[in-house]
Amino acid sequence: MSDEATPDATGLEAPTTSSDEKPADANKKQIFLMSYPKIIFLYPTLIFSLIAGIVTTFADKPAADGGQHVPEICALLFLMITGINLVVIAFDFPRTTSLTLFFFFAAVGMGLTMMFRFYPEMMPGVTDIVKALEPHANNQFYFIFAGILGLIFVGVFISVRFDYWEVRPNELLHHHGILSDLERFSAPNLRIDKEINDVFEYMLLKAGRLILHPSNERKAIVLDNVFFINSKESQITRMLGAVQVQLRSD
Image 1 (cartoon, rainbow, N blue to C red):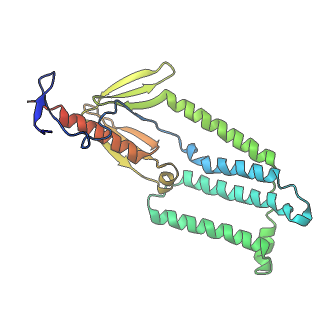
Image 2 (cartoon, helix red, strand yellow):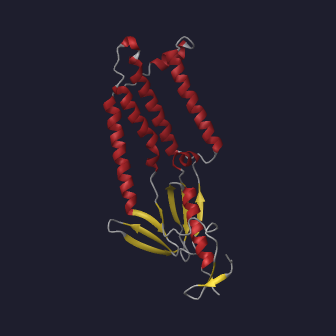
Image 3 (cartoon, helix red, strand yellow):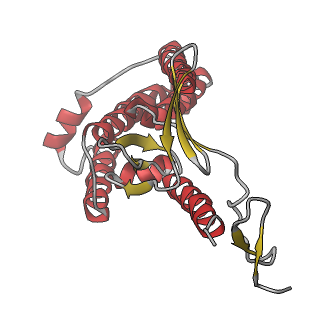
């Protein structure tokens, strides 16, 4: 098949390419971008609260079977995971080194706590302090906590459906409000910046910050916590790039 340019219905010449060389995202008519609040990164705590609730439900065993330690262990793990999750939301970890150090100290702390409880003869003084920590929570606590957090998540997913961005080949649309108010921006000259400010958030949901610079607009559009940001950025670049290549004047 020839690669020579052929005129289209508008009189403009567009280069023809073979089907295997055409970008996969060139045929996309729209790409949706949604910005989520940071609370969405608490989903590991939500998952563990459900697991702890199920475990404590079936952990009602006689003392001879050793089941008396299960609720206490679940409570300690729940507090540790929740604390780690809150630290992730409160602070940014821009580099892999800081994230590695964080995981290292968190793992060491959890391991030492468990070791001192099950091997008290190693360091009696520290063991006495650790033994003083006896958190307790039943299955109802975990399920209620998971239910509250789950309802918040549902509310978040509903709210972002009333405030999102839509990228089309020739325009950028902002849908917002219950009645779906609409703002339009020029898209062919759109410039995109991608930032990954937190390695942990990227690991959890491939999330990052997307900055859009529409033409003829002084202020940039900043979208925080966009899921699968690499894929979104790649799709937008390919779609707009295909438009810029094909729609060229004679």
